[in-house]
Length: 221
Image (cartoon, rainbow, N blue to C red):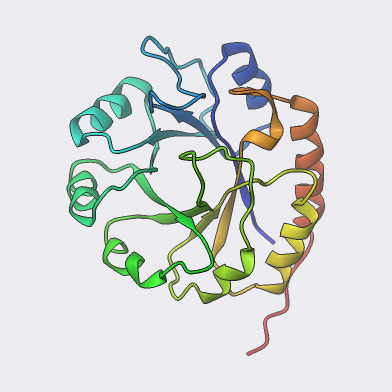
């Protein structure tokens, strides 16, 4: 099982350095002022290894402001966490070469057909728990909903993922080898406080992840 991992909601320089030492595949920085994990107006991106993709998280932001943040912070990935339209994604994709990830909050009645118009302009879909906050609710959704996913576009999965349920998630992934889930997105359940990640919890997750990488699913044809 080849799963990458992202740790989102980073802000504190020393904490960023500590988490970087664990070599996550992606590190997320939230540029949404209403978020408890907003990086701040005067945020300066610390030096991060080139092997870690820097993800800018935006909510209903303008294309120009996103492009400005991409250049200023050398972002490799843009995560759109608002009500961004298909036309918005099309315009952004035409003006940048960065990976674009469109987020959708899912519940049992989620209509997967709404994704199709976006499929030409995004590189992945991220499914998060539909809740009061734009993310970081600490609540997981019923992953079985994803069995209805009809596309081959890569999936990122978020929402209340922690040490308490990570084994359950990996069991689900093993039992659903056809789902193109590529990235597990971690946030609030690995925090001591908003934007301050617990290194020991992340190390424990990393150990479990390494154990899972030796698993090779058998797909019946």
